[in-house]
Amino acid sequence: MSNNLPSYLTISADVNSDLSNAIETLNPDKIAILVDENSKKHCLPHLHLSVDTQIEISSGEQHKTLDTCSHIWQQLTSIGCTRKSLLINLGGGVIGDMGGFAASTYKRGMPFINIPTTLLSQVDASVGGKLGVDFQGLKNHIGVFQDPVRVIINTEFLKSLPKRELKSGFAEIIKHALIRSEEQWQYLNRHSFEAMDWNEIIPNSIAIKNEVVQADPREGGVRKILNYGHTIGHALESHFLNSDTPLLHGEAIAWGMILENDIAVEAEILEKEARDEINAFIRSNYKLSQNLPSYESLKTHLLQDKKNDAQGIRFSLIKKIGACAHDVLTEEAILKKILK
Ligand SMILES: NC(=O)c1ccc[n+]([C@@H]2O[C@H](COP(=O)([O-])OP(=O)(O)OC[C@H]3O[C@@H](n4cnc5c(N)ncnc54)[C@H](O)[C@@H]3O)[C@@H](O)[C@H]2O)c1
Ligand SMILES: [Zn+2]
Image (cartoon, rainbow, N blue to C red):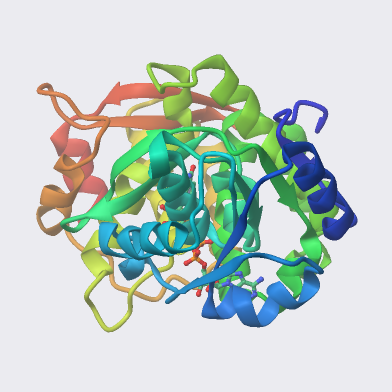
């Protein structure tokens, strides 16, 4: 299943050897590395590498901003980085998206290598070329499409990741299986979370995303199936953002998938039995403790979704395990019923 990986992506058993090979090929005049305090503590010690500068930023989505980019650009400028220099982004999706964006715009583009260190960034942000930052509370509002020169994935980094973060990334793995691969779905169902072999699952999950991205790089059509679970998921993420119990991205997506499956049943797209099987699996993996907000309180967030148009809210909905429809216009009455 996993032979369809992007050409720039390496599933690595030895990060140092793969990184030094990539650097040798590029032959950069300067090397900078971007970390946050967690990737500095847990991941940087694994790399045997001499760099010209280490740029450290504070962890967290709230720092995925143009202000932080300014800091990165200043640091690159202060050591005289050119278009022949290299930025290595070591960390989760925030580091990869923002470091990639900062590099792609620095002097109209300097090369960057991503070493994703969370499960979410390994299976999702590692492919598809989307880079950017949040702006005025809008997620990924400013950004570009640009592939890294290399992405190096090593599952050893996951060992220091808190379980809650691991589970968050697992939601995207579930999503990839449901939209495209019954085989991967069966695999996930045969193993307990603790017994998952990431070296087997991650390449398969990336291959699914890559296949979809290759078919539609600029998200004109089929790539929208990757947004399954995300229309409601993003609305929930925004809703709980400033509450006492904010959701991690994958937790919101887990909820989003469950509720969007309910929508799919109401819209007569998905059979009840398949919905019950999927939703039971997701519920068994996530403790979703928050009270579900009503349709009215989610409505503003739902209408923000990039996939909408003047006619209403459009969803990517599962038709059966391994197949997903996109651009399904959904009646408000169904949303009100599901989000009571
Ligand atoms: N570009 C894309 O296609 C794409 C796809 C999915 C998500 N994203 C973006 O990715 C971001 C979310 O990614 P994320 O979940 O990796 O978040 P993150 O980068 O905030 O990382 C989560 C937490 O884990 C810490 N961390 C990272 N690696 C660690 C390790 N090995 N051990 C211990 N702690 C570690 C981080 O410091 C952070 O506190 C969002 O900004 C989202 O928009 C982008
Ligand atoms: Zn997601």
